[in-house]
Image 1 (tube, helix red, strand yellow):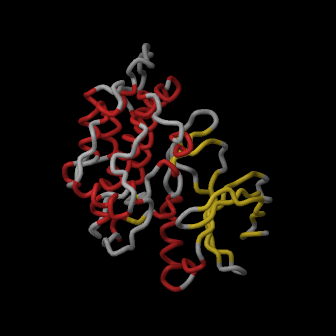
Image 2: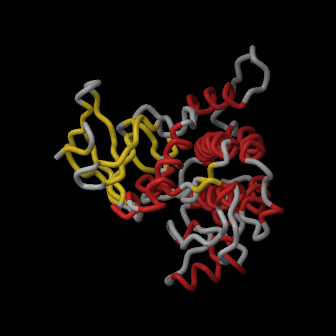
Length: 292
């Protein structure tokens, strides 16, 4: 089966917005991952919107953002597609099936994701579906944020779009149908971080209504109470991420990263080499990820 010039080898995943396939690019001779979307995105005004957002996402450049190589609409089948780098690794949700992660490692990985989101937010792109299934930990220990296919340009988001994504990671404004911005991604990232360090979701329930009710009105158990190995200083980070009012959350993803990097140094980072380029987030990210 061909999509554009790409030879589909196998379907490796399915989600709310489409299927992901492992494919071969015969022109360059490399393996790629292709996200296949519903045909409805190739029709009418949706076609131009899909192409426009794909172009914006294609301009995002960060080591922790899955690289977008190509995009298009397969004319014979009218299937929209995105072509991304293919990496071997394990999605974070699979890792969390075994329970919580070491606290320093969780902080280092989420700080790196926050830096990646910061790059997207400065381009006006909201990810819109931050969750463990969209985070890949590669075989060599790198963290990659995947699936900007649901991302909406912040300047175009009116709040009228339908509820998308996974309920356990929805933010209050998403449930209430209000406009979302970069701080909405930080709420979802806070849910992911809480789950990484405690092994539990902060707003879990048995029904969609129950989850939405908890997101809108409940306060989760402090992470240091759910996991005694977590320092109490970390609780304030979670409280700020999960604030019901977006104005009470971190103003930018970079500020969240700055708070997490010192916490990521606990116990696992005992020696820091002298810095030659100041206190850049990129320098610290590299050191912490290697040691975590």
